[in-house]
Length: 409
Ligand SMILES: [Zn+2]
Ligand SMILES: [Zn+2]
Image (cartoon, rainbow, N blue to C red; front, side, top):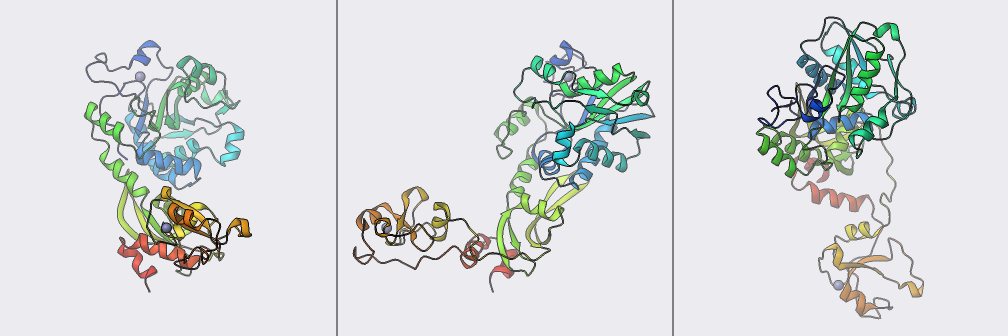
C-alpha cells in the first residue's frame, strides 16, 4: 500500500508515459476535453492492499477501515497545495437506496476520518450534494455512455452553502473521472468558485482491467515499463491476506480454519481477538496491520455435531483422497463415490454409506455388498465431525508452530 509514484497527469492523476505526454504532463483524455475540476489527487493506485481495505469498508462494512483510508485521503488532500483557506468538503453521495443497503456512505466516513486526522481549516458539507437517481455501474461503458449514464444524476441541495466557495469533492475511488466531472459541473452551476477532487485511490489505465489481485503479472509488467517501485509490497500483502488462520472457540477449542482476510474482518468487527500473530504486517500509511495466525471468538458458539455439508468434496476430504478399499491416494478427479450398500439394494446417500473409491475398485465391486465382492473397507465411514476436522487442522497446522499448543495435546 504505497503512494503513487511515477509520471501522472497534472489534472486527473492518470498515469502518463514519460516523454509521450506534452511538456506539462496532461493525459490525452484531459487534453481532449478539460475536466470541470481544477485537479484530482489520489493517495495510491486502486490495487493490492488499498483495494482490500476499500472492500473491507464497502462490502464487509468494517467501519474502522475508514480511519486508515481517511489518513490516506488526508495525504491526497495535502498534495493539492493551491487550495484556499476555507474549503467546503463534499463527499460524493450514494443514492438513498444504496445508502440504506450499505448503512453508510463510505466517502463520507473517509472524509470525516481525514478531517479528524488533519486540520485543513475546512467545513464538511455531507448533505450538500444528493444523488437523485441510481446509476448503473460505469464498468464496461464507453466514455460517451459513461457521461450519458451519470448526467443529471446529482443535485445541489443547499445552494447558499456552495455559492462562491472553493469545494473539495472527495470519494473512495476515482475511476474515469466522469462522476467527479459531473459533480463539478453541478457544483459550478450552483455557484462554486472552483472544485478540487481528492480520492484515496485511483484506477490506472494499465491495471484497471485486472480483477484478480493475486495475479501480479500485469502489475509487475507495468512496474517494469514505468519504472515505478510498486508490486513487491502488494504481492506480499496479497499472500498474507490468504494465509490460513486457526479459529478457536471462546473455550480455546479449535473449530475452523479461515483465510487471514476473513480473520482480520472478525477481529476488526470485535467478534474475535488475535491470540497469535503470524509475523507479517500489512503496510498502510503510518499503520501496520498485524496478520493473525490464531484468533479466538469472544463469545462461545455451540458447534453442531455435524458441521459440514454432505458433498463429494467433503467425502473426499474426510477420506483424505484415499480409495477406502485399496488404500490408494489419488487426485480428486480419479476418485468416485461408492455406495457401500448399493443404491439398488436400498443404500442411502449418507455420510455412513458413501466412501471415496477408485474407478477400478468401483468397477469390481459393482452392485454387490463389500463382503460379496471380497472387499473390505479400510475404516467405517462416519459423519465429518469435529474430530475429523481437527485432523485436517493438524495437517494444515504442521507448518505453523503457533498452532501447536491449540491442536496437539
Ligand atoms: Zn488527465
Ligand atoms: Zn481402489
